[in-house]
Length: 570
Ligand code: ADP
Ligand code: MG
Image 1 (cartoon, rainbow, N blue to C red):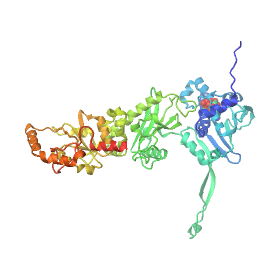
Image 2: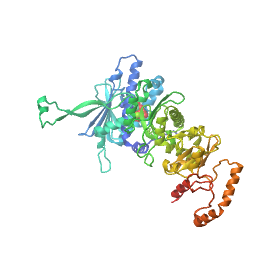
Image 3: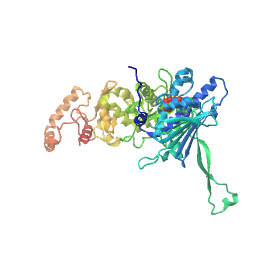
Image 4: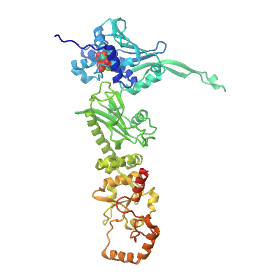
């Protein structure tokens, strides 16, 4: 029996494909623009290879033209163009990528260019917004142009066409608006402009649109001097480049000013304030990537809410793939903003996701190390900024210590800081330990609503007298984090409300205390009887100086922690 070819019902295939691979129809513009950019790359490469003096880099352009009257959106390029056969093959066969073919045939080109295409499906995403597409193309070296025409599902035709210059024009006739679906937006200048900046800002060739602008009308000095002078405005049209072309992270670090970084951060990540710190790395190796990260100086308003989305932007060779790639940041560094650009990602077919996350994991690990070392360096050399960071995001770092029973605690312990009884500054554990008294066994902490309230606790008297520093725990998470950490530098954490404070007492002191306890027996029993079940026991305290009484907790949880747990249970 002879072997038969599978025949796909192309109409259904196309529907199925478009609807199943893309979740977001606005990406169609990214796909068409990426193809145009690939085509220009190929022309540039071919002409350079054959030594022909073709267009120089500046003469290349991708042009976007909306036309509201006939509801068309046209994207044209002066790239390599397609012959009639190429129109058939590249646009007539789903999943055939001329660009992938080009890369495999020209290994050198793969290195020198930034060709984006590989799956051979991007073009069809245009059918998400278009009911009719005409692609007019004239191939480099040919006189005759051809036009590929399709209404999507019913197939296509290729005919002779005309085009003055080499290149390709893709004309989309947008679908009709319905109640639920509006396509008009893709004819609006502001919308097209924002799509270009969002997805295609770093395409290496200019993306141009003729846009409407307005300016003040010239007026004579005489007129301006009049009391009721009102400036008049006139509108005019002008070509404008929409993309920034060169990503700031691809520039040499020495050529980027702090100002530039700050402006980029503020416009890209919607912050009014300059970042506290910029981390810019370019890594070449088994896996290559550029990363540009920012530590914000202020807490985003929704940071400690469910609405906050962590993640870095992910670019593949300058084209944005994902807005918030969560896997690139651990939760405890979720406050870091920025982006990663890598040519080495294996993208999934819709380019909205990744095929597998091995490379991503490797990048994430390296970024984490980089963020850690940068923060610790900041702590050492620019303490003021570090403390500012900690005031803003320290809570998240403390949650990080506590998270998953402390799997990250060793990595994070040196990031943690507390206010304390000895200085007005934030203190690290290391600093605390260096200030410990010779006879001091534990790292002491006190919990309370505020630094001021803790400072007034009766228990503090004794610590002041002994000269022991006490860390102030004022966030709910604080004590949980310390309990998980257990110790720092082999010194255990101990609450100043603990029954046993671990103070050394001489034999005489012990004896004197026992005697006192015996003497006060009657008073203590009377107090215990009066309070009944409200307290577990009433004992003579060794820790009070200026205050008559204090509460102490039994073993385990401190009073504050009990309060938190109780509040959570309610
Ligand atoms: P991919 O870009 O992944 O290869 P597409 O479906 O986006 O897949 O495009 C299919 C092929 O059509 C491309 O590989 C390219 O060969 C050809 N093509 C698309 N647009 C253009 C264009 N503007 N100029 C020249 N060739 C193009
Ligand atoms: Mg493509």
